Image (cartoon, rainbow, N blue to C red; front, side, top):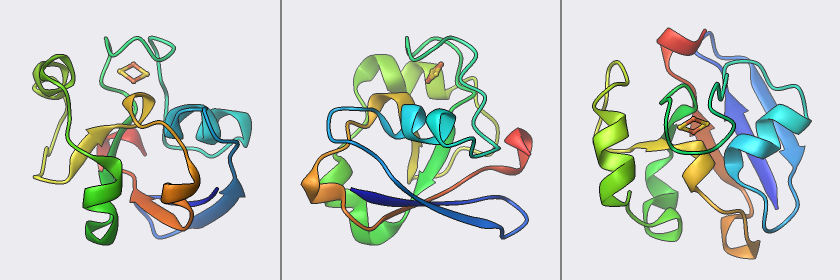
Length: 105
Ligand code: FES
């Protein structure tokens, strides 16, 4: 699926991410800056925080209870905040746009 990551300063990175990978892994493998993923995708660091574009709210689903509690450690959490390591890429997410928070700049 094609995923567009938009950095806090507006720089856009559109990359192709294989189904089955997480949105976080898609950023790391394509050297997209702004996602640190200190814990490597274990839902234990909150440095892979993204804002999901509202048009994809349904496709990306809701945060799990574990993800919700880890998001408490992220800065500037909004209703569309997610941890990108917990979003699995599939065909449904083709065209997904995620914005990266200022704290991961
Ligand atoms: Fe650590 Fe997502 S990579 S919570």
